Figure 1 (tube, rainbow, N blue to C red):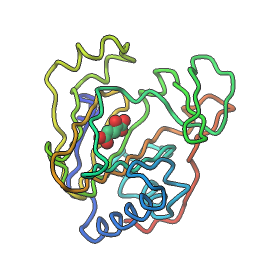
Figure 2: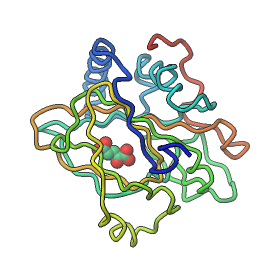
Figure 3: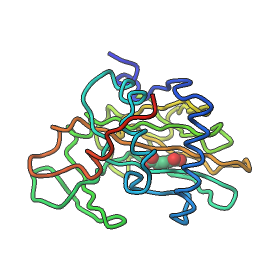
Figure 4: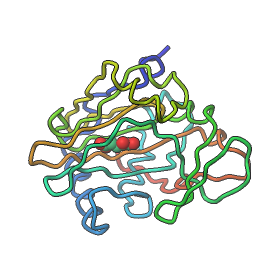
Length: 230
Ligand SMILES: O=C(O)CCC(=O)C(=O)O
């Protein structure tokens, strides 16, 4: 059993060099400026560099060589002007190419023009979320907090989340270039940043391509094939 499967998260230190992080920071700032927000979804449609990052050997190798596709990517920053706490939750939705009747899928919604759906638990259990840290991300700078082992509890009803969140949590403090891998089912949250810095994180969700119901398609999968990062 790996650390990731046991605790629901794992931190890999120093995956990207200072030069690579410099390039990714510039791209994050360009994308955020263009979008007019520090939280930007669907990076594959906005950035060749982030698309290549999601398909890079550097990230794919962290997932043990299993075949996975990146299907959703989000840039999350916290700055003195745009800064908020995130309540304890699990990530239960995926983004897909379109809506289709499928057993175990639902409810359906549309976010930023993209169809989202809650898939069956079995699919969520096969997913990995990867968070690439572009800045020093300390407890004071809005680092992600997680409840180890909570990914083994299935889909936790909203009314029970608070009780689980009262258990002991771990703050995933990371340096630029560190990568956090986690299960989307892991209970997680983050505090408001109290430092006047950026807290840029590129968040990418992966799943085995065949895990999706036949007839449905992953939203971002297949984009970008040339790898310049590692
Ligand atoms: O980046 C954060 O602080 C929280 C993001 C989050 O909640 C998520 O990835 O689901």
